[in-house]
Image 1 (cartoon, rainbow, N blue to C red):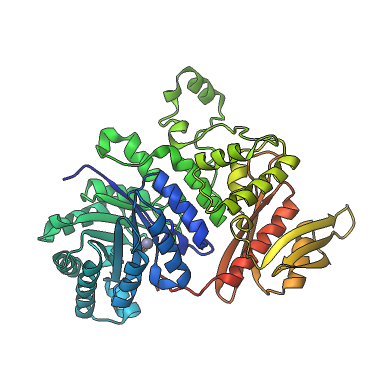
Image 2 (image 1 turned 60 degrees about the vertical axis):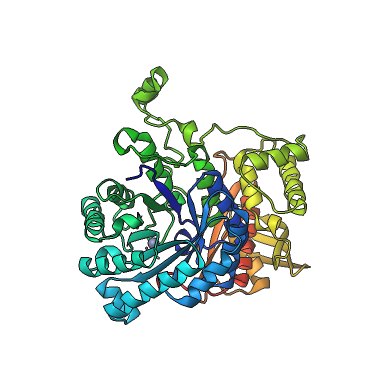
Amino acid sequence: MSDKLIIFDTTLRDGEQSPGASMTRDEKLRIARQLERLKVDVIEAGFAASSNGDFEAVQAIANAIKDSTVCSLSRANDRDISRAAEALKGAQRARIHTFIATSPLHMEKKLRMTPDQVFEQAKQSVRYARNLVADVEFSPEDGYRSDVDFLCRVIEAVIAEGATTINVPDTVGYAIPELYGQFIKTLRERVPNSDKAIWSVHCHNDLGMAVANSLAGVMLGGARQIECTINGLGERAGNCSLEEVVMAVKTRKDYFGLELGIDTQHIVAASRMVSQTTGFVVQPNKAVVGANAFAHASGIHQDGVLKARDTYEIMRAEDVGWSANKIVLGKLSGRNAFKQRLQDLGVQLESEAEINTAFTRFKELADRKSEIFDEDILALVNDESVTNDKEQYAFVSLSQHSETGEKPHAEIVITVDGKEVKSASDGNGPVDASLKAIEQQVKSGAEMVLYSVNAISGSTESQGEVTVRLQNSGRVVNGVGSDPDIVVASAKAYLSALNKLHSKADRVAAQG
Ligand code: KIV
Ligand code: ZN
């Protein structure tokens, strides 16, 4: 059996299914480029048939990515599979990932199909997909809760039709490491042609065991592909976290004995990019990428680490891309230095016009803030208005007044379709007053389901990064805004969410 472990990243598909984590085409493209720098083997770029937006995102990623295989999810029907193949046309290496539920519960209640119908549809879909691309992955959704005899029958048939990867999802995060590992082993032993495909694990984190289950699937079951996401992003409690599983395999190579292609030095940048894009903040004590993952507060630990690092550290912070906050640029930095820094950070802006806009923003920021950190630059380029000048709403200026004992008041100028409008409102605080002033103009009627502020580089001198999550008619979107003034950052985040709310097409849920 090969000792290469394939890392299949599904941040842009399963991760994006997390309520509020939906991303624009350009955001997805930026993250895909970072995943390529990380050297993930397969990027699941989206679910092409679910919406025009997702189709375009998969297509853009397929055209841009050269070193990783680009994959699209598709339900097990000809239309979805054709859409996936069409979106993937420009890819150097394309994979279609087709799925259909196989558990009694899903077949009966959700699909309303008999097992024989599901069996036929699975076979037919893999056959159809194999006529379009050479690399076809098949997933029996809710595989872990499926009847093992039926599952073996389906898997044997789809391998015979040419499926090259068999992925066994624990869709609802119900598995226990030993049992899941044993389950994969049983399937591999019982399916007669199991050696003709690579086996893959896909675990959700509902009981907090997605990483452990995935590793058990590899060690006990013999799987050689792990499906995972940056920061463990994903439906409900999320998916297996890429950074944890990768660092476990790397740090404990003595036990796992597996080869990985991942360039781990890009992990922290990827984590930040996903967190800033989706507004899903990484908890400080999160393994590998949390702010405290390499911090030692206790005197005994600090003393130990100073004397010999491995007293309390099993990994090196720099191996996953942690570096002390560096003043990378300032107001005297020129356009070339800025461009170079963007490149070092893995940020590729599409056009010279975008670089110019970003550089102008950088200069404006440098005028107000003497030290510009990598985090500031990432926040700046994550600002939608840098990469999209056709936004419906854009921030122009804001003034607000708040004083103890008085009702805060804000006056704001924004553009609506390029035309400047002014508005004013009182509120419970300056942020509330500013957002109410915007809402008075825009009248979105959206409900705010999350508002959070984070200091980008840790001190009061840093920029505030604000996430606003809005919900309207069943759609949930995130807006992120950053500025040294958190009231302005809040207004920008609110406008960014409104822009997404207005532009987002309806989508089909992957597990709907
Ligand atoms: O969790 C799941 O079952 C999935 C499939 C669509 C692979 O994400
Ligand atoms: Zn999933």
